[in-house]
Image (cartoon, rainbow, N blue to C red; front, side, top):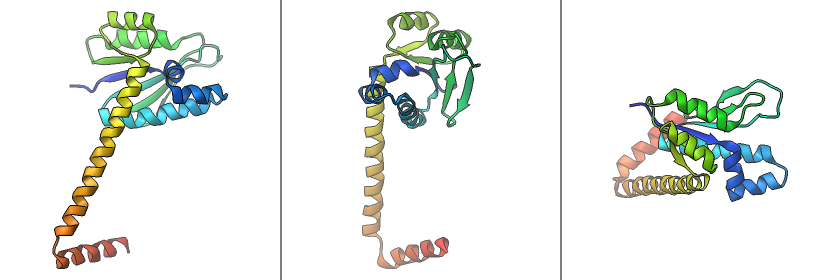
Amino acid sequence: MSPPVMLVDGYNVVGAWQSLQELKATGNIALARYKLVEILANYSAYRGFHTTIVFDAYNQPQPGATEDVTQYLKLHYTDYHQTADSYIEKVCAQLRKLRRVIVVTSDRAQQLTVGGFGAEWMSALHLEQDVRSAQASMRRKQRSQNTTHRRLHSVMKEEVRQKLTDWRAQLSQ
């Protein structure tokens, strides 16, 4: 089965998350976009979603563009006079019945529209909570792995520990 597709209305999320709102309020919208991309790159890899963050280029007289960020995340800038909503609707229509699609937006009208295409809806605030939950889970898993490594090291015989240390030193040369 194909991994789920997540379509994120980028500016809607920037406007909903407190940390990104603060960056936007200081006039640093580019940094807010960058932070969102960084957060969702990690989140998408962890969840196994193929995520596209869609940014409006409605008033920008340039053609749309798509940029691969990672194997799990890409950015899409819409065409001149195209909204993120219309692009997301188009993709939902194309993927209808082919893939699981999750649309992230807090726009109520958009929620109803994408639901008509069979897509799931997630609010921007729910995504923020899920991102935090995923980050906490990743930290717990990493701590557990570190603890297991330390525990293994403490019960290892001294001669085995020394051999491993010697091998590690040889590999780094």
